[in-house]
Amino acid sequence: MRLNRAARNEVQDIADSLPESELELISAEVDARMNQHKTNPLMPALCAFLTRHYGYSAIEMFDEDDEQHEAAEAFLREAMVKVARRELAIEIYRNKHGNQEAA
Image (cartoon, rainbow, N blue to C red; front, side, top):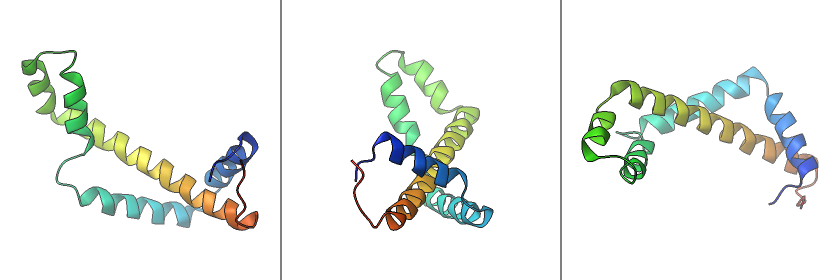
């Protein structure tokens, strides 16, 4: 399903106005998914990307930096919550508009 600009705006408005109870459920689901991973899946990809531009020693120090891991975890969690909110909003939008595509 592809959304045109008006549909995207409506979906975002729905996502922004979700009740607190829905947001708590989304957060709990995201936390459960994140707890399934032993390491943040962003870190290996980030280190691989950085090796194109920086030396191995600097990358190794970055990879061992707990603050960087915490920042990456926070970023990943925030992204997952945003996507989950929008996914729920799209379902609400689809139900509201009779499951039609808005291209």
